[in-house]
Image 1 (cartoon, rainbow, N blue to C red):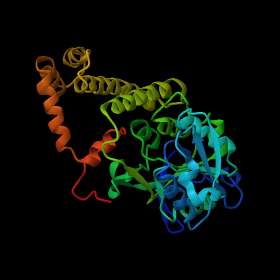
Image 2: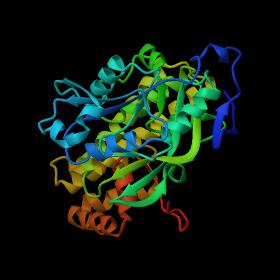
Image 3: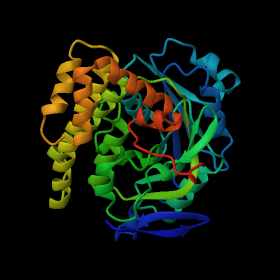
Image 4: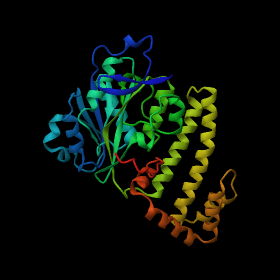
Length: 357
């Protein structure tokens, strides 16, 4: 499905040409349910909800799912408690929370907001403008500003530009949008979020939607604030992220309808992501002084299809683990904190001189 950049209202939007059944979408302006999965977010939830209440276009509702959090959601909301509808469940992870929110919401579309992030004031306005003009669209995303410790460092498009062409193939390769508005009925029909994915559940879900034929639009304006916290994740998180990306690729290649070129790309990605996982496991084992650290490095040294740089580093790790650890520590100390924070969340990015948000 090819797309082009067009103007809808005051927004630059990448969207496909209207389908023959465009008139069969939501009649009139659609209703939006803003949904917030919640776990240990007492310090930030009020700011997230306040950003929704300050929208120029109001949602039908704000629904928060308390996913068995041990802290006090009501205390965190304070005076905003009456502005939201709260559902509660035993802890099942973010996918279970999102599925519960989707099931209980009343809007035509669900719009996810993470508990420690925020909308800019016109985000829902942009989404409703697009959907009002294009009722056939099932998914609407916007650009986002990425903040680290309260300071903007880049936009999501600067990290991974949204592609007008070959969106399916690009999305197989990298997650180019997050926190979209999704037609609730389509999300439910697709099976919702896979609760077996503790991380990368959003990318896996969006990939199934797009590969399944859901028309999507992207607003080229950073209307979401993605607030990162430095130093909050470990090398174990990087391993978990790559494991999930690999499993997602395996699932897509086995269950999704792919064109021959997409299937070939999927097979190539499977091979490269297996190598990526081997590197991250070896790095983690080395940093943690795990008993299998030497075996992991030997796998990189003698395994198939690893490049010379990887083999050289693996050789150092085999011969002198302490030296290899010092190298990793020095490199981490020199790494841009924003680059490291994104890497820990599965995003590969190098800051350019002009990439500040």
